[in-house]
Structure formats: structure tokens, C-alpha cells
Image (cartoon, rainbow, N blue to C red; front, side, top):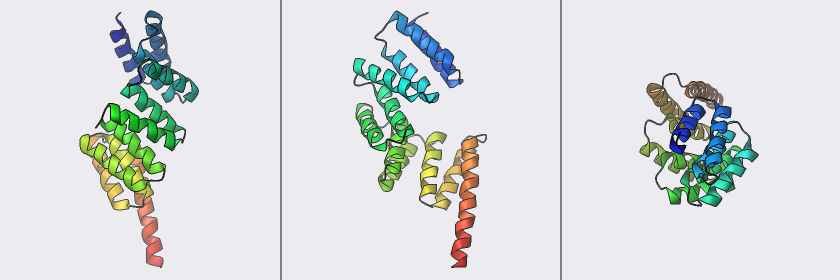
Length: 196
């Protein structure tokens, strides 16, 4: 089996949540070619999904050693930094990824999220809105944008976005949960305002 075929199979396994099997395939690819950047990216992505951050970081940094302009490795490393709450490092890494591969909605989604949670809420929302404009049906982008608006107590915008996400993907549990939360907080804040 060719490396590209193994990579496709590993990606399918990853998307099915079968991370250990995907990791085994990535390691098999590396047995054929120790410099196969995509295999290190696949390892990093799977370890990230398993929240094995040290292993993920090691694989992604090695991928970047082999190819410093790998937008995918940069994106995944930026996502990893965001996952562990290092928003400053996440933003720096994702801005680099955005220079390598500009206008990519997934890079912009994570960049906007990290900027928002790093403290620059306005700029974070602008970048997330840009990601949404580039991928208007991407429910991950829509939900992350909605969560940021919820953090800003912009309940109507949050509800509008989440209802839109559910029209696209009616079984999206994250959108359903966030919508319930947004409606709850909207009711509670309305009660507080009426009491004053």
C-alpha cells in the first residue's frame, strides 16, 4: 500500500474516532519513510484528540523541523497551545500558519478563538466572523463564534447563530447544548434587568 493510501486510511480511522489504529498506521508510514511529514502530522492530530499533549507536541515539532512551512502542522500546534490555555503561543503559531496558508477558515477559526480568549475579544470576533464568511455552513466555526458572543452576553446573536447551525446540522449536540445555555442566560439576565 502506498503512503498516500495509508495516510487516507489513517485519516478515515481518525475521523471515526479510532485514534489508536490511526497512530499505528502513522507509525507504519514512518517505517517506510522517516521523513514523511504527513505521518508526523497525523500522529500529532491523533495524540491531540486523545489529549496526549506532550506526544502531540513532539510529533508536530518534528514535522515542522522537516517542513517549517507546513500549514497543517502549524495549525495543529496552534490548536494544541489553545487546548492547554497558552493563548499567546497559540496566536503566534496560528498567525504564522495564516501567513503560510491565508484565508483558511479552520486556521482563522482557531486564531479568532485564541485571540478572543487571550483577551482581545473584538479582534477575535472579527476573525471568527471572517472564518464564517469563508465557510458559512461550517458548524464548528458557527458554534465557536456563538460561544464567544455568549461570553460577551450578546444573547440574541448567540441564539441566531446556534439556530442557524441546527438548521444545517440538526443533530449537533454542541449547538443544542449551547442554545439551551444561551436561552437560560438570556432569561436570567432579563430577570435581573427587570428587577433593577
